[in-house]
Length: 133
Image (cartoon, rainbow, N blue to C red):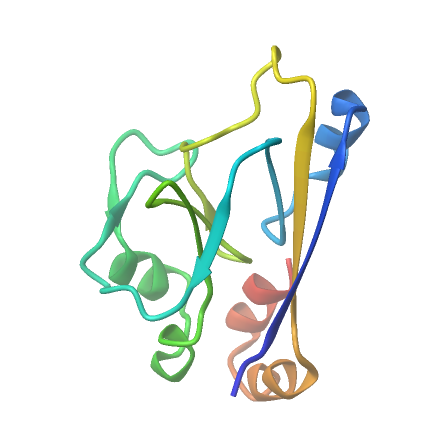
């Protein structure tokens, strides 16, 4: 069973922060937003991935990223005001992105537990690489 840990901090040094928030295991949001982490959303839910003109179903994201079916129901989905903003390690969305006018920034980092990483170790090389980025 995958277990996750999330760490969050608010910072004012936006320029330095944006350089560190490159990977899909970190999320930068305007500070003051109430995050909700859930699992098991219907895979028919559509989101707007950052950099994609349009939307995709969660099912398609899991398939494209080669997330095993056994992990999909346990994968955390981070929302703000009911809108999906992040699937750690998989995709960020266009919702609630940091703008130049935002003074304070919330940085959230996700970590997967050792057992889950070991299970992923038995998966294909491409899947392991995707999850470790």
